[in-house]
Image (cartoon, rainbow, N blue to C red; front, side, top):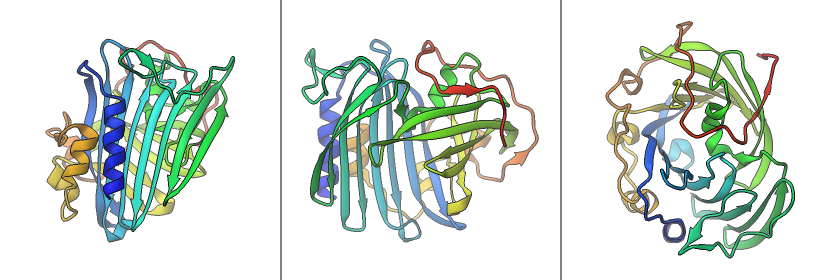
Length: 309
């Protein structure tokens, strides 16, 4: 765990900014495995109003039902969501893994006005990643190229929002995204199947398939994920009203959270709404037209004009 915390600290120092970012979303989630409480997730999305750089910060901690996993991600992307850099850390039992990656193909993060020395040399087309992977003490250097339009998987919803139609029933997105946990890119699809009601609120039901696993997401028109289910793994996560409601008996990893988020995250803007009050989704309700965010459209998933189940 000491190594995990040090990686968080190094990353936060590397990507520190003098400008306070605007938080787009922040929330705590309960994790359930086969009906048993298994842990919690904290997710924050923010954007720097000056540089337009997006940041995704994520922390997960599970108990024995969730295989005793501690995991963290901090990722940055340019205004059009082209990857800039990310760091991934995990601890499963006593085994640790970390990935520290930077990309060429989008705006690079800077420190005192200088480009990162770790950035790979530029290339004409596509995206190039330079990464250092430490897997239970074994260190490996990666130098990988990805097709143009590849993005970090953590930003999928925001990339969909940047599409000219936003999130709309019937749209089917095909995409290529980097899985932060292994530094490799995979093809995926996200199909907006229908509208539904979740705890009395109108949402979109999205069928997302990535790394050959299907995820069912309930998402608001603003891109706020309120419920996720992975049927084949019998795992789900739902937005909680508070940190204590999300973690229940799972310990609060305060030191890791402070290093990763700069403090203990609050319950988020949705905590007082029905979305965070527990309950079961009800199918078949209507939802308002999707509305995109302020950033201008840039790199986007390829939209297939045909809907699929």
